[in-house]
Amino acid sequence: MKVGTDGVLLGAWCTVDNYSDSILDIGSGTGVISLMIAQRSDAMTIDAVEVDADAYEQTVENFEHSDWGDRLYCYNGTFQEFADEIADEEETYDLIVSNPPFYTDEFESEDEARNKARFTSSLSFEELINGVAKILSENGKFAVILPFKEKERFITFAKEKNLFLNRVCSVQGNATSEIKRSLLSFSFHETEIIEEHLIIEIERHQYTQDYINLTKDFYLKM
Image (tube, rainbow, N blue to C red; front, side, top):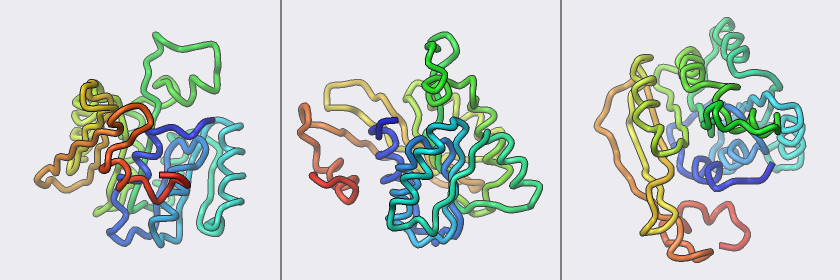
C-alpha cells in the first residue's frame, strides 16, 4: 500500500507531548503512522493492529527495518477482537490513533484488500468508537482523520461514549478547494475546542509553509 497524505497528516498532527507510555495505531496499513509517532515520542509501547494479512506483513517488515523496531509491535486481526482482549486484560492506551476505513458499501470494489483498507464494512465508525472507549486510559487521547462530510456524525457517535472533541483541524488541498478532511482529537474530558485550519498546497507540488512546518521532519526533500 502507498503512503498517503492522510496518514502523514495524522502522524504529524496528533498530540504526543503528554508523556504517553502506550500508543495504539488502528489499521496500520504500511505502519507509517506508528513509525512517525515512534520518531516523535519516547513511548516504550507502540502497538498496531491490522486485519489484512499483506498489510500486516508490510507493517512488520517496515517496523523491523526502522530505528525503533524494539518499541513497535503489530497484531494481525480485527480491531474488535483486539479491543475485547485488551479490555479483558484491563490494559489501556494513552494515545490511540486511526486512519479508519470510511467509504460505504455502495462503492465497494472487487479488490478485497482495498475494501478492507477503505470501506466501513470491515470496521464501522460505531465499532471503532466502541472499541476505543473500552481501552483508552482515563486521561488518554484518541485522534483520527476523516472526510469532512463525516465529521459531525463521528463526533455524535463519540459523544455517546463520553468521548468529547477537544481539537479539530480542517484540511484543504489548496485555498480554493473544498475542505476535504478533518483531523479530530478526543478525550473523556470536555474542554474548550481548539480549532485549526490547514491548506496543503499553494499550487501543485508547491506546499504551504504551514504544511512544511507540520511534516518536514518526515520527508527527505521538503
